[in-house]
Length: 534
Picture 1 (cartoon, rainbow, N blue to C red):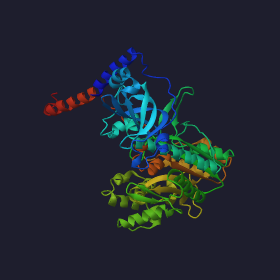
Picture 2 (cartoon, rainbow, N blue to C red):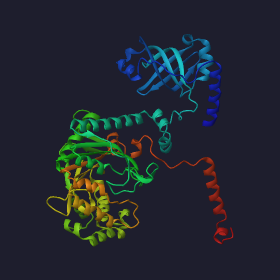
Picture 3 (cartoon, rainbow, N blue to C red):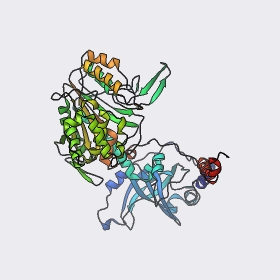
Picture 4 (spheres, helix red, strand yellow):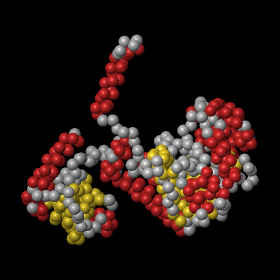
């Protein structure tokens, strides 16, 4: 059907050219946006029906609906800000234009500029009485069927431009995302942080444990990695004398895709000299107050997310990593102490064995070390229960090679993760600035790399050299922008807040037919194939 419409519209395009009408104009001078008009003339009561305002306007946008009724027509135009009805009559635009151009050659989806006067119809709808209409862009392909819109999720992501045209609420999601990014920058700027840029192509995959994307640098004749985090470069800047820095940009981790993870994601990381993780917890609470004021309205501290009400009123709840895990295990009927969790690796394996039928992610625990066991148990048993903003603090040292040893327990580090609606939103440390300790932990991390894991673990000699020149006490934090956008737009899939998410290449019709016929052939000749006769 779409291809037939395409062929029909190609013929209309040629006819327009024959008539001397340029189907792809260069420019159109607008006087108003549709939002401007709708806000200036809100409908107050039924007495407004039939009123003629007389104000002249020039707007441009895409035709979203079209009803031709003899010698007149109604159509709706949509621009970035909204949608408005237009009325066109043969007397106003001339018989030749109306019959031979508008009725025959203009379609839903075309972009037009209109000039006319404002009035209300008998039903009270604000309408532009069109005196002049100019085709600005001929649309060769049809919009999705108007009554059902665009609801095929994969098509929405593959053809996001259509999604944005026919689903106005999707445009609002991305406007909100832009406001979030602006608010992040404004907040940190006001707090005295300096925005910087560090390399996206890095010779060492550092700053986190993750599988990186690898590419080749022709000019230098070396392999390099798309950064998994900007952390170690930002800390070098703290060594260099900057005291408050941040970077907002893309990170890349060549790992799985699910509703909360995307291999290409946006983060803000910021580092604050002479501060610790306690200072960052206070700053994070202030940040969310600022963010909600900007996005949801002044003083709003409660929001709806799916079937949950989330209360951002500070102070946020705090739980320790081991305490939260111990309590979650108790709910499963397993009594342990925090010391046992921290020191008895065999016990952790026993716990996973007991729980693996309920939590399928625990089935491969036999190959895991203590860090992996604690991480997986926490992710499976605890995270989904953390609905209101909760700081999970004081992690086992094995989980945090870049964090400073806890001042009260050298088995732990001064680290927190902020969870909201069961998802990790932020991660922060009192940063490790002891070069000898950092060197030892890097080496331990190299030794502890799990067999078969695809994460790249490398020793960053230059970063150690930087620390040896002296880095002041520092606190650092990373906040995921994509997950913030999910939270504040009430979306539980990360693809809904990424304009163009990566998808597997779509098979064309020929490939699908070959695949289908191959399966039928294999099924039909199954016995012969198994016997080796075919």
